[in-house]
Amino acid sequence: MTIKYLDKDNNKVFLNFTTDKDKANGQHVLIIPIYKDNLLFTYHGSRGIEFPGGKIEPNETSITAAQRELYEETGAVVLELHYIAQYYVQRHDLPSFYKDVYVAKVDYIETKQDYLETKGPKLYRAVTDIPEHQQSFLIKDTTILKCLERVIELGYYN
Image (cartoon, rainbow, N blue to C red; front, top):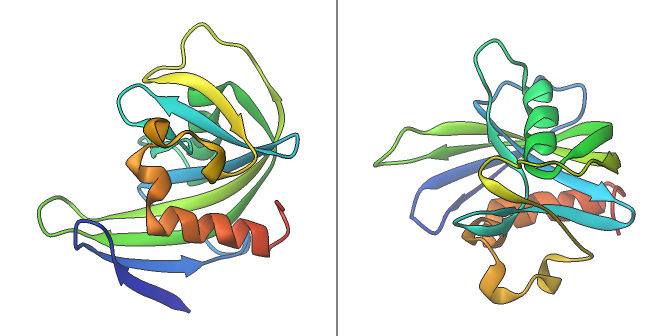
């Protein structure tokens, strides 16, 4: 079943919920990580607090990209990773893209000297616990919130 709607920029979004049996083949990844009964976010240097994610590099699989992005932006090491959704954003002014969405159970978090474009990990019980002035516009995105609802529906987080 495809959920269709317009995003804040009036781009068409097509969201499909998946299972581990489906093939992940997007150009980008988004990870919803869980660590010790908290949601794990990253603090992006210019956007604010959001879930980790990024582009899939050449010759890299979607799952490898998800593990890499999560580690680069938070220092988190994955215990379990599950493919839960893919969405397509049909944009009018920029290239359209597919994004694979994963839920990750985190084993542990390493302290790093460099988190690349982010300021490292942040833990919160809920999105609403993040101070409003620190929330990235992405954490308010309908698609990301629907994916978080899916994580809860599947029993990965409560």
